[in-house]
Length: 589
Image (cartoon, rainbow, N blue to C red; front, side, top):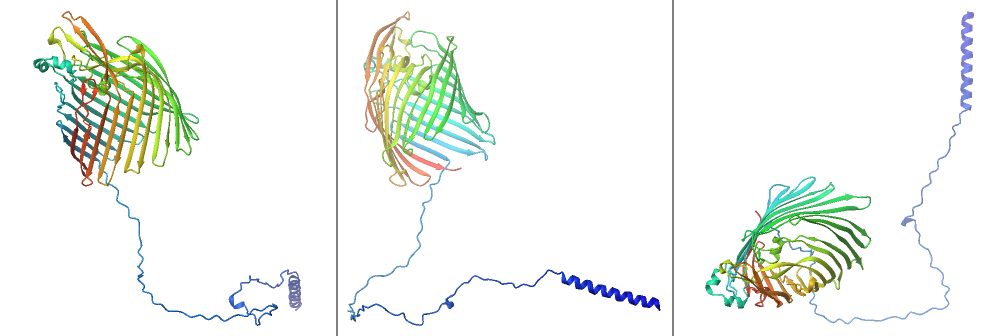
């Protein structure tokens, strides 16, 4: 019983303690109830506006009375011819671009039995390699009035060029074949009249030139050696002359801190032989080597472009055991003025020019195969000039220069070689060929070129050049004209018609005449030399082309349209009016 009472008492005590603790916890709670007021920005609407219920009071003491205005309409019928048109959207109509073709052929015939043939084709071997084939031919059977010897000529060229574009470099290689035929037909009239028909028939004036050339090049993208080109050729003629040239030209680019240093190299090895001499027996041999280096840097400073460099050339005449070193300037400055509408430039350069039988015969095909070959030392050529736009479509450029050259190569007429033994006379011994003489030359020249162009449909231009020559030993500047003038025009008067023309004038030149007698003992005796003036000449050429369709066109060319009987070289009269017509065809394989 006591135990039960004790349990009841303990439970009552526990209940009292629990109630007291809950009361204490509820009194220490800090959470209070507050009001949350949400404020919204006032956005009035039209419905919130109200109208003034009454008119404002007027306090103006002056009141103006309004007068009644009476008016009426007069109806006049008017006939209207206006008819509104419906608008239509307009757009810019672009003419389709002309289709371009990768292959081209042309053939034409003209008087003097002239034949013209051109062909060009591009073959895509694969995505990165291409083969270009080019063929050109121009020939004439001659027929110049008053010429007693054969005067036919021909020039044929075939070229193959393989190009390849690889990942880190590009390269090309190919070969070129050129064959030319000319005749030493330039007999002086007095000499021609003195020869009998049998003697004229015995003269063989034929000369042929054949050139076999192989070439190649490579261009790198990320190497110091940027590019290198190599050329090698063999050149022969109808008189057993031969010449070989090896030419290597590398280009190196060395990056510096702010600029790149470029170095051009030029290495030439020339070997040749002439089986004939103009006077006397024996052959003429030459063996020459030159190595040139040309370092330079280019700077772009705002409106100024600068090129600063120099050249050094080592030359060795291996046949005569002579060695020399030459130095030349290579500087140029170009100033862009008036927002690049005016460009002013000045500078100086020079170099050792390697004369060869091949390039001399290109300048004068009537060269005799009896030459001394040596280089020309272009000590310096100082120049200054400008180009500017006078009007939007009118531009003018002009230049003045002063140069000095040692051993400049002049062309001069060979004398008449009169042998005691008639059978010994060769086809070029009748004062009908040219030789090369070397002399020092100083030249002051000034030239100007004025060009006017409207888009690409019409352009016309004028060019003029005057030169003052001074030579060593008081000799004339053989066959160099002081005055050269040229006017040219090109006009596309419709999409299918094109006309172009050129008129040029070459001033007087100085050449020589003489005779050398060779006795039976091969001893020469000269009758002296007389200077002769070769008259200047005016020549007009024109061309007209009509496109029948994008592929086919017909053309007509006219040369020497003024029909002037002038001499390009002494005693070498040119053909009269020459008219040639034919077809041009473009296509893709």
